[in-house]
Image (cartoon, rainbow, N blue to C red; front, side):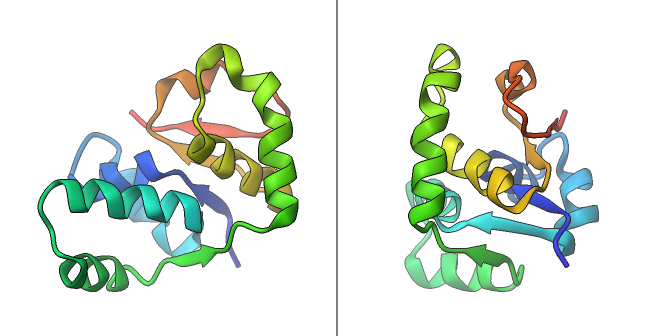
Length: 127
């Protein structure tokens, strides 16, 4: 059973061995990630020059539980826009938060600005 929702920034912290990587590694088997946030990670790895085959092998080895972004999450993410606009959160950010809201799970992120959120979703900031 999952205990956390993983933001793309948290997964990238793990993959890039950045501060907070140890925290993510310790809970990785207890996390889920939105398909939108997985796409963000794939994009960053592709930007770094990795091939699709390498990316699929690399991420596949992590055995991530990926939750598809559905209609309910689309509405949740959309409704989070007015509450998060002042921080400039992207669709990917709101997709992660929406997944946390729908599943009732805390969200793990490396994005420090999320620590300022007061929207009824538990956010744990790495670093």
